Length: 389
Image 1 (cartoon, rainbow, N blue to C red):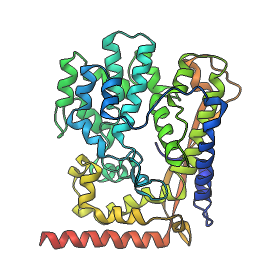
Image 2 (cartoon, rainbow, N blue to C red; image 1 turned 30 degrees about the vertical axis):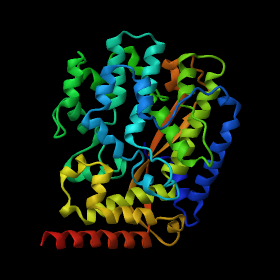
Image 3 (cartoon, rainbow, N blue to C red; image 1 turned 180 degrees about the horizontal axis):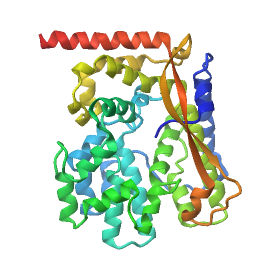
């Protein structure tokens, strides 16, 4: 999940701290959705599944073996939104932090709900749910925030790395491959679902605009911002798509508007962009001490070697948006729009109504923040040199 509209990003990075006020406003409006008539019949959808809930929902030895594998357990300590997860304005230290582990479980629970609704054969269900569980298996530490550096410096990105894990070709091992094959599930079929190359009609739950990855992801982002426990629309939107009726379009429209606002006012708010770029800036300053093996780490282990990066992230405040700016590159923004002339009648028609566009936008970084980050990076590099001598 990355990058929103050019107009939204430009507002967030203007001299006035408008981005943070937009975030505050969005959080308040999400909280108010608790009483919204659109979501009054909300099914249960816990964001943080306990061990008991995992065993209850994924009532199949195959799913539990995948979940308890070393590669999947690694996701427990990989943050869902990367650097944003370490910014105090968004994360309460007394609450559980969202992870790629919990997100993958959420997506898989939606896939399982779809499979049971469609009464799929067991093998098809298992392939579909396995793809949902493993769709983010290749993420490295700090998720998308560190990935641009790893991709440029070492040619590593999470899609390709995930493919290698599923095929048993990574340093993490072939445990996933062994589990799939022991239950007669072709690893390539799982990859095809994830990458949108499957010719199965059921691949639509991964490829339509309101796909199960988006449904869970936007729901989690809404939870970051709400001032009180937020509504959880993921299951309701999926059910609205599967049981298409007069309420489906208003509900789906509301969710699409929510997605656009979250990208513009949260993920690409001033603080969000700064946090992501700080990770890249930090890595560039200390890259001679970096190794491609870092991509195998989770956040906890990565932090052990890069504690100054996390210390700096912890210090970021909305005041850091102030002051003079310097251009430091580009980012890809997105705008999510509704084509009101299109009236879908099923999950197969959603592309015509729910659209988005991508735009290259200039990224400006507060000069003071840049200088602070360089200082923290050089401090970390000096510490490494002292340890190695």
